[in-house]
Length: 456
Image (cartoon, rainbow, N blue to C red; front, side, top):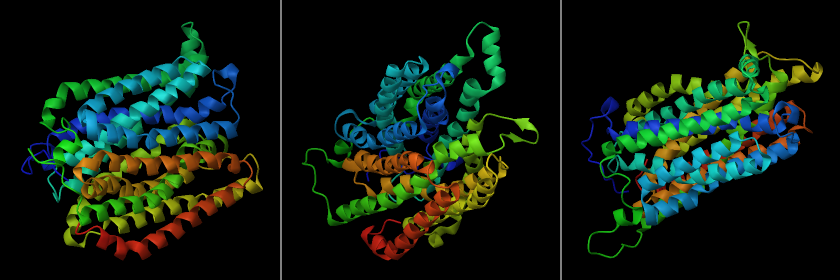
C-alpha cells in the first residue's frame, strides 16, 4: 500500500495527519444523511397512507429495506473500481455526495415512483463516496504506520457522531407529535413530517460536500491520483502482484464472511430491533416520551463514549495487541451477547401479549453491539487498507462494504420470518449463529495470520 502523505505529518488532532479531520467531517455528514434516512425508512414504508407513509406490508417493506441497504454497500465495488482506474478518489467523493443529496430530495417529495428513484440515487452516491473516503484515510498514513488503527478509530467516531444526531433530528421531524402539531398550526399538513425528515438528511449531505470542497487543500495530494497510478513507477510498466500481495488479498476475501455475519446481526437495528422498539418497548425514559426512532441513536452514544478507550487500548497494548482476526472474533461474540440479552424480555412479552418492556433492554443490547462494532468495524477498515495493493485499494474497500451490504440484506430478509417466529426463538437463533462463526474464526486464525505475511 503506497501512501502519498508523509509519515512525519502529525500536525492534526492527537498527532495524526491534518487531512484526517477533513475526511472525518465528510463522513460524519454522509452518515448523518444515511442514518437519518435509515431510522425513518422502515417506519415510513409501513406507515398508513393517511399518515403520509407508503402503506407497505411489513414483509415487502423488509424486502425493500434489505435490497436497498445491500445495494448501498454492494455497489461500493464498482465505485471503488472506477476511482482506482479513472477518476481518483477525491472526484468520486464529490460526485457521490451530490448524488446522495439528490436522492434524499426525491424521497422528500413523497411520491412512490420518486421513492425508488431516490433510493437509486442514494445507492449510486454512497458507492462513490463511502468507499473512496475510507480509502483516502488509509492513504494518509505510511506503510506500517502504528497510528493507522487509532486513526481509523478517530475517523469512526465521525461516522457515529453523524449516526448519533441524525435519528434525533430526522426522527423529531417525522414522528414527534409536537413538531407535527406545529406543522398543522402553520398550515402545513402533519403528513409532511416524513418530507422534513428526508429533507434534513439531504441538507446534511450538502454540508458535507461543501466542507470537503473548501478544506481539500489539507489533504495535500491524497485522493487526486488513481490507485493504478500509485502502484506504477514513473516510466515503467505496472508490476505484477507478488505472492505476498495475492495472499493478503485472499485474507480480505476470507474475512468478508465473518464481517457479513456480524452485520447480519448488527443491522437488525434497522429492521427487527426497530420494530421491537416501536411495538414492544416503552418509548419513554425518566418520564420523558420520545419517538421510537430515537433508539437508533443509542449505538452511537455508546460508541462515542467507548471509542476513545479502544483507540487508546490498541496503542497501549503494543506488541500484545490482538491480531485482526481475533478482534473480529471478539466482535462476533459481543454482537451475539446483545441478541442473547433480548431473549428474557421476549419471554415476558410472549406470556403477556401487548406488554411494553423497559427501554433498558434495548439500551444495553446496543451497548454489547457497540463493543463488538469497535472490535470489528474500524479494525476491518484499517486492515483492508493495510492488506490491499494500491491499485486494488478501492476495489478491496468495496469488497469490505459489500460484506456489510450482504449482512444488511440478510437483516431485511429476516423481517418476514420475524412475523412467524417467536421473538425468543429469533433472538436466540441469531445468538447461536454468531457464536458458531466466532469459533470457526478462532480455529482459522493461525492460518490467516500466516497468509497476512507480516501484516497485523
